Figure 1 (spheres, rainbow, N blue to C red):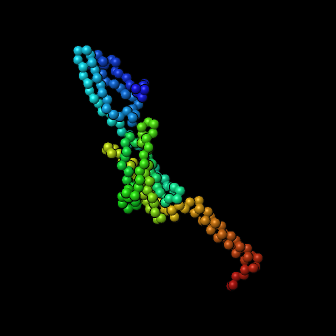
Figure 2 (cartoon, one colour):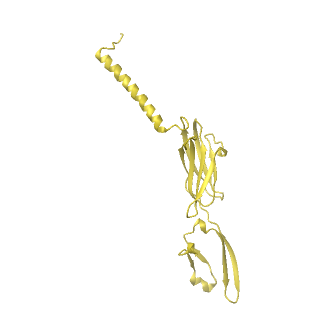
Length: 191
């Protein structure tokens, strides 16, 4: 019962009125379950079973892009603090459900919350993706979206920046050489 230490209390002033309610503070996901209340006064006794359901909606999902070693580029949709496993839905820019192409993993933290991660591979094309995490009990939905333009699976963004910078540098160098030759008379205009 160490898990409940300092979080439970009886309403002592209400005991004389027959109220044996128990207050549970700082409710955790791990507190969910079946509880039994048994009262025996010597003249009579009674027992009641109460089911405590604890739901946690989870955080707003976030989407990141990555490329595991020797694998296709993929998106990762992550959300923490779920009480139960949510439904995860991926949609493309046309609203087509592409969830069948994804996978889902979940890990429980020391407080009993779930961290839900869903992965979906992306192809070599421009696309818009959205990831929706929905509680199985009626609650608001969490939605995250991302626009992706992939040059090639596995190509680093830094590599693209390097080649574009090199191309720009070469264009500026060619223009400067042309201007220098024109000024020194090596290259004369034909007109």
